[in-house]
Length: 176
Image (tube, rainbow, N blue to C red; front, top):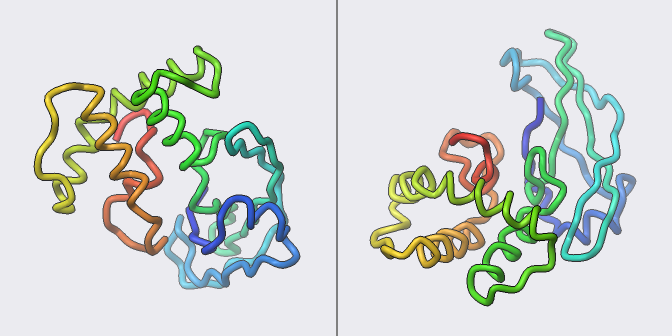
């Protein structure tokens, strides 16, 4: 199981600080079984992250619930599940392609990102309207996508325990 956490660090800061200097939180409730027990740090695993043209390896902290035995990974809020490219880097890539036609990724990867993002645009519009952030949508698909990307870039990761719509972390999910 993975949960997102806002470490209040940029991806580059997270990479350069390393796990020795990052303060990992004390988790007092299991997100799987909801037991009020302290989760114990259970090691780390390496994960690749792409920021622009740079490739880094970062440590992801794991926790263990002694009540149900589930392992929980604490994903920094700038990462997306199942994607190597950082959240902002992926959004910038999409916006650059939609506005200027240029891209820093391969055409196959760009096509995958565009198809996945366009498939989720209606759900994103609905979620932004729920929050009162989107009042008028352009008719043109590219303009609509650019507006949604701009709104996503402006939404900052919030409280990791909030029950509100997690737009900033699941906009590229298979189905919202």
